[in-house]
Length: 146
Image 1 (cartoon, rainbow, N blue to C red):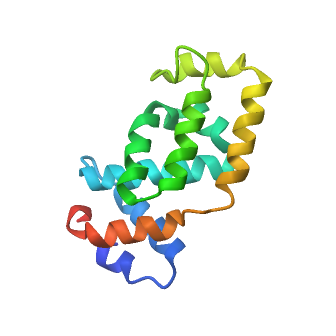
Image 2: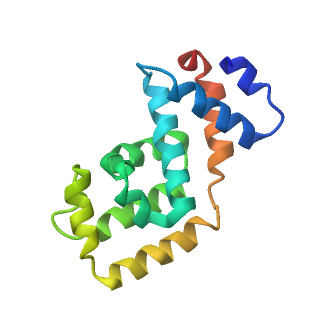
């Protein structure tokens, strides 16, 4: 499937899934495709297990890049939520190494988990329509997705 074929699909969710599949098959991806991938991965992880799952999985390796990606697509509310979630991470902060981060998460204080759960609830209010923002971003940077 080409980017034009993906963008011609009928609903936003189908388009996002198709674009994600196109990007996933590539060896070298553009900066715009990376932005798409970071935001799409955040969506997937938080929707399936909250910020705790986002940090637990390899997606947590790219926490700071995901912040920039959210800012890039204009997801201001979600950017703030992720920023708060990162700030809650125990010292020394979000480790870039997945195994190190998992070790910290296995011992994390329940009060931090409760604050993340609260952020999850905020996230699910969808003040930023991530799918629509991603779709707008892809359309504006279509040449980078070929």
